[in-house]
Length: 196
Image (cartoon, rainbow, N blue to C red; front, top):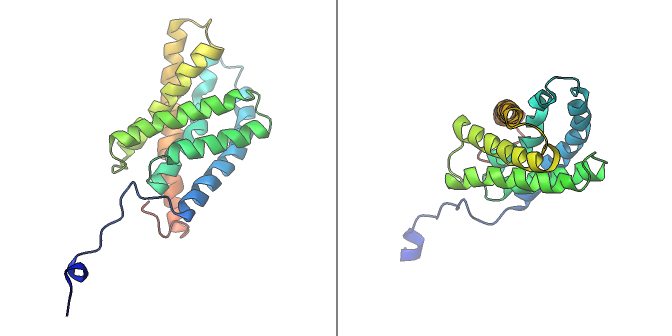
């Protein structure tokens, strides 16, 4: 004899369901790995200081935005961009980032900017367009933060050029780079149990 409860289909998990342990661990691992990458990347960025105008060195900026796109692409839950960026920024700061504690504020802004784009889609759309928009939003947040703190005396024209360079870098490194990483991880069988 079947009951009404037994006849109902199982509810599909909500995008806003509680994080699983594996979600937390994978996001934390992404953050830790990229925190070390950031620490190394700080020197890569500094090595391009010879470029003129100097804002052109930001062609490598997009690497610092990867966790804000990669983690949500894999986890697909609210908070993944912010969580991954904050872990990465914390590790980078602990390892001796030249920007010290400001690395945490920068990570927060970058992660939150990407979260806003994913939230606007209800955490349901993962096209390259959405990933690119999240990457660019993260770059815009970083650009605004840096302008106020580090580039206050730079002309508006150079600030506009810097924004374009950062946006292109964000799309290249964070959006397309995240897609490439996810494809590689999927082929390696690492993403079993994830929607990515």
